Image 1 (tube, one colour):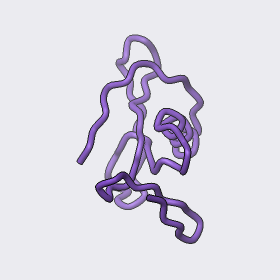
Image 2 (cartoon, rainbow, N blue to C red):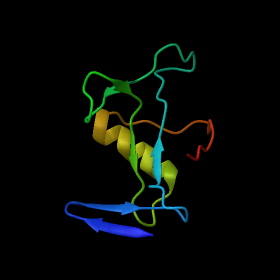
Image 3 (tube, one colour):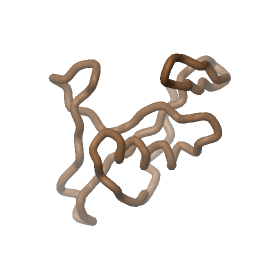
Image 4 (cartoon, helix red, strand yellow):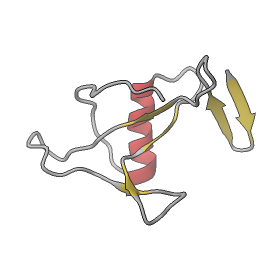
Amino acid sequence: MVKEKPNSTRVYDKDGFRRRAACICVRSDAETEVLLVTSSRRPELWIVPGGGVEPNEEPSVTAVREVLEEAGVVGELGRCLGVFEV
């Protein structure tokens, strides 16, 4: 299901949950540093970059786009850590 809102389009799964994607960004193969951004809703919190999946967009594309939008970082996807449903 897709819902149009001013300045955004939201995509929902069959159970009514908003489809979102995120990624854990590391600087090197050593994975000793992780990129975090501040939450727009709660600026005192640090979170991994992520956001809503656009219509006809793969979650992997969403994850890369959100990192660029939220942190200004261009990267490449590595392994998938999992798919989580709530």
